[in-house]
Amino acid sequence: MITIDVYALARREAQWHGKIALAAMPRLGASLLRTEGSIAYRCRAGRDARGRPALRLELHGNLILRCDRCGGECDLAIGASRQFFFVPTEAELAAQPIDETPEEALLGSAHFDLAALIEDEAILQLPISPRHEQCELLGRLTQTEVPGEPVHPFAALAVLRERLRGAK
Image (cartoon, rainbow, N blue to C red; front, side, top):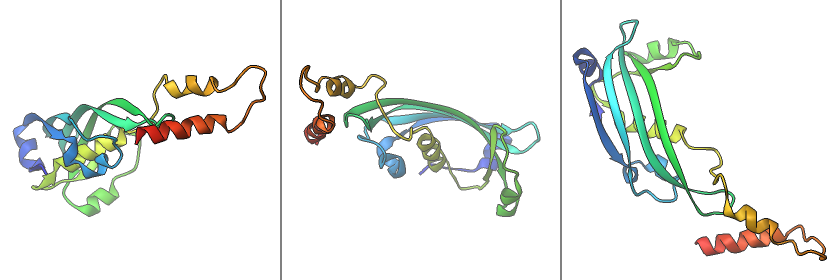
């Protein structure tokens, strides 16, 4: 857990960077095939154009997911750059309009959990269905057809089942 005082950092217009191990992010780790590695982040605190305490967060890293097609490892490079502003109360947070502006309101605190925010942003980068762009399973599935023989509609599933057994 990385806690920061968002108000003090905004007053100082602080900048800092670091890395968080993937193994230290259990919610993100639940979606990963392996949790080796880390996510690098860079933060810049200050005031936004409307004078509110704000934070610019940039993150990048490489994640290893399971391909939904073949069950193999699927590398995903993530990167995000987001702008946040802080409000002091939950009532003010609830009063913020839901719109398409690039900045997002967050509840500010002298003990704000930056690691949780970084984990949230990394989770938002995950695809719904991770897949290789050129999945090797697609080539093998088309090779199950033998010229002159009837097409067996479940032959591709048998190939997939054997592939998934081998991945365990």
